[in-house]
Image (cartoon, rainbow, N blue to C red; front, side, top):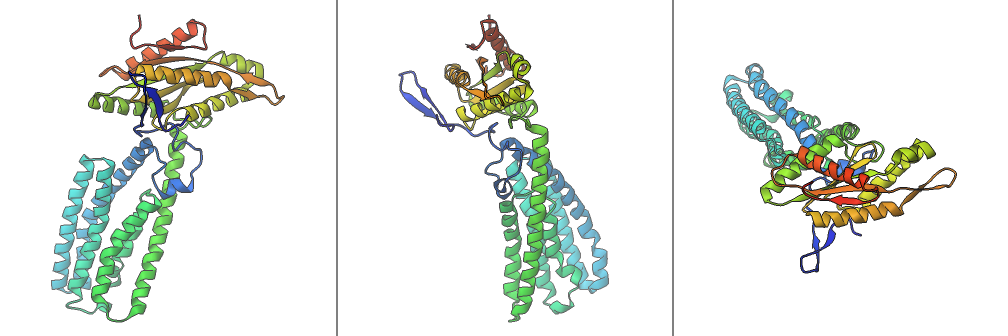
Length: 397
């Protein structure tokens, strides 16, 4: 059984593969420890973590835009000390333009908090000062020698690079931003090149040094954010998402379902006589059973299915784009797989277990509370009908 799609039968009995829409799997990005791939790119990140990181970046980005919108024109008082009057006035106009654009970016990110908008604003908020610096230096060098330009001004690009270290970006994202910053600086060096290649190498070395430190700081921020995210959203025993993340996920799926006039199904499963397993074999064996079931669910279900530990020995699965008949077949297969599975005690005694499952389909515009109440009632029916069975339905009598 592939966990990338379900092979289902259409109304004519022919097999049809329904590709999943990758919303936010309960299977992805649920390991306890960060991996190199997690830091390098967002490929293995769940949508929920991407949104969480986005909000974190937005708050820092707003603060930085406001800080520089105020501090950039305020620093003009120093320009009138280190530059002559004409040059200081030129810098003041430049700084006021930068400040105005930063305020605009602040308003933009405040109103639109999408991931794509954050990427655009983050890029512009760092590219704009670099472009401003490049244009200003070209103007200054027309009236004064480069060596006479104050060090506080020539170090501006490296200050901008250092500020990038405040954001939990992936390595690939950090490299892209550094490349965006490097492009106008490279053009500036090309225009101003006088044959002194040692000065160019010196600036290049400073850029690489500051850029490397920036990437290191970004990786540290990312690892820290991952750790905090996992501790607050991932069940430490099974590696599945917890109920809080599940509620965000199913709400998003319901919104998308209503907008697309699509549907999805939910199944809730509860291990039968689980207390008896704990009492007979001990809680360590009971934990092994839960881990075994969670691994089985990850293996049997699609990447697009949201799998959560709902509490105790209960699990809940949200299956986008599946109607009740298809979801019921999935539930029957899961029940059979659990029935055939087992764990071993330290004394090499085999422990088998079964599950009762309730399955239902989302009804357009209903509340998540109503949906969960219905599937919970179906699970209760399965328990009352003798356990180790699947009960399905859209409405209850």
